[in-house]
Length: 146
Image 1 (spheres, rainbow, N blue to C red):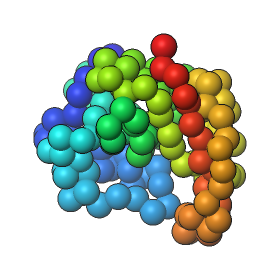
Image 2 (cartoon, one colour; image 1 turned 30 degrees about the vertical axis):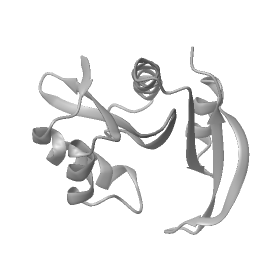
Image 3 (cartoon, helix red, strand yellow; image 1 turned 60 degrees about the vertical axis):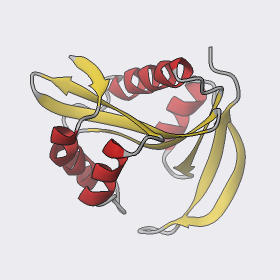
């Protein structure tokens, strides 16, 4: 298993994971734009040529906004999300990002547990932020990367 930076040839497989993981998935074109954007930092987890997970963030000055993290069905509940997040956090630190933020559905208990384990703390809510189903977003921050 390898974790590396995303390249254009990964877009189709990442898009397939996006479709199965989220009720309001990003478009193929949006993912492609992330590959070429200088502010975007995306990693993919590859197993024998198959992309089985990805995670990404936007760098905004010295802060990182985590945009997506997903693991392919059939590979979930094996700790791969934790590994991806740890690699993404290390990548952020290597790129002079001092703190991270993200939004997560208030009902996504598995993700909330993961983020809390990694040291993220709840900082607020965005009412009705998500659609399909309508749900609040919990805003979380990790203030110091180490």
